[in-house]
Length: 200
Image (tube, rainbow, N blue to C red; front, side, top):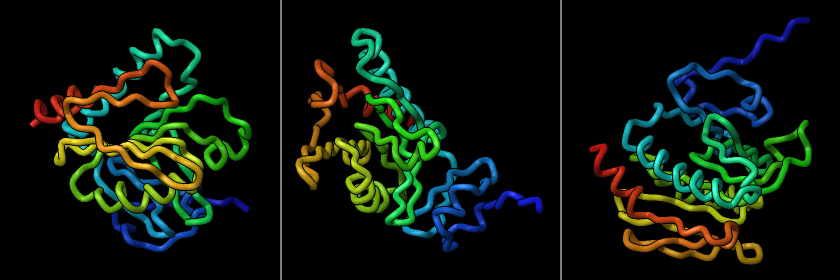
């Protein structure tokens, strides 16, 4: 018996689906698909402002990686990785994931390979997902740091795992953030906010 892949499209936004089914589904191109607590969430591919911020963020990690070889194993974007939180029936595609350790289970890669740092760039309409839903899911998944960069607020919220909960630090535009996960890394927020302004 031939099993045809399950196809989803923007018209499926708000539809209920099990994680096991969603993880095997194929989405129509031109949109971003996530499963949020068993509900399909569809949004258009972000615009130039979002991309400009991500380019600046990546550049800072690339510069660090060039000097501190071997510390970071992978720098992955939304189309290159995913986070499967089975207990909450969620599949997330973070804007950026920083992996320091190698995967331990290739067969269940995205359910078991835990990034040390996850980063989301807030876009209009994503506030609930980024600040509330993903905050809980990434903690449950075992992520050590979760950074939420919000150009509209002109700040970054850095969440750091301490025990089984997040501690918070608000990073202002003129500050740098020093992550415990990356020795000697000074993450500068100002260039990212500048990139957002320059893109309109």
